[in-house]
Length: 473
Image 1 (cartoon, rainbow, N blue to C red):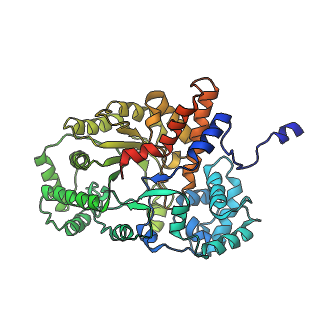
Image 2 (tube, rainbow, N blue to C red):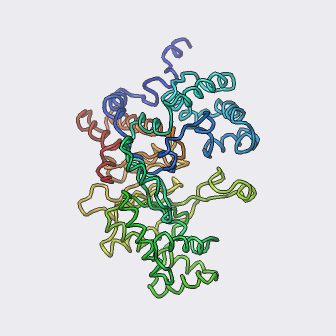
Image 3 (cartoon, rainbow, N blue to C red):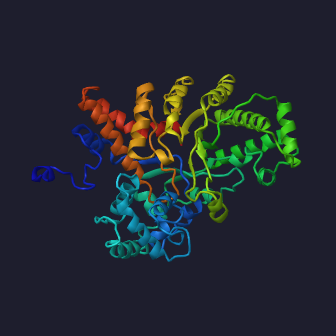
């Protein structure tokens, strides 16, 4: 027993997640210190511009983090300590009591990576260590050395792509761009989801706001498309080079311009649109948008198969994005292929990144991606990194192994945070460690030569250089 204990790795030591010598060398010598391109997240550009200071760890760590909220609820924490009116300290203490229960959950790893990397906290978090950790971190947060921009700069971030509605003014993006004291690029991503949900309450109100933002009178479907294009041009001018779409249900149905004009007119009158008509409207509009992205040289992202707002009672109480979502299991192959093919037939398929929240779809996406490569662009169509419920160690390994099995893993553009938290950049470290360990396993199992020069190039490219070349920000 003593021999086993002596050989046991310490928790979160320098070789955390690295279980072979090749992986250790690849991470420490080639991946560790590379910059970060965070090409999809939900950070607030206003908070970045204003360099917001958080008065305590709860505000920067627990507010808006539905990963933690779900875990706390599952641990029996009352809602008042999750999203309710309990004090920030009591919420932090409730989280501290939950953390030791999270064995095997990446939240345990993320929590301690963030405590260690940003605040120098070596102790594990629990209800006994919570008071001292609370005091230490709050002292740092109010010192002026750990404001929002400090988290970004000290994490080695070069580019941040936020998620922005076409009707947004992008006021804070422009202000950040003009700020010579901040050298990180903070760029908008074009997310027109509300303009696609023709059957959802609020569609007409959103179209009216789009009309105002684009200074285009929207009296027809063509006017609607013109307004969307107007905002693409505006985003491009500010530096936007990426779009993003939440396609929770993948659908495709052929339609003519006349068909979609009639459907749009119907919706603008407040009339119910059938499922068939909704499919036609979305298909035609997505094809149009894809053509615009292609003309601009943008990358297009499709996030597929989320099932949102499952709990009606809690949705009515708290609203969306509060931890009541899950994976969907809609079939995606035929409609996704048809949508991509509709663009490819026009020679207008942009660089595209495909993510599914359901890992059942991994092999499907990996094979679809291979059907639309070409044009001399390395990895033009990407099987996107493990997303949301899948950005666990096992989820990342599953995604990477599937991509390597079927595609060209060395052209993978790597990790993103997809987070609302300024402390989430340690997820890039978690990814890089996992990726280096996986490659090290292949080498030590004799499945790939121990050619350090080639391995180093692969690791550096996936960690940073592939994304840098792909997006060309």
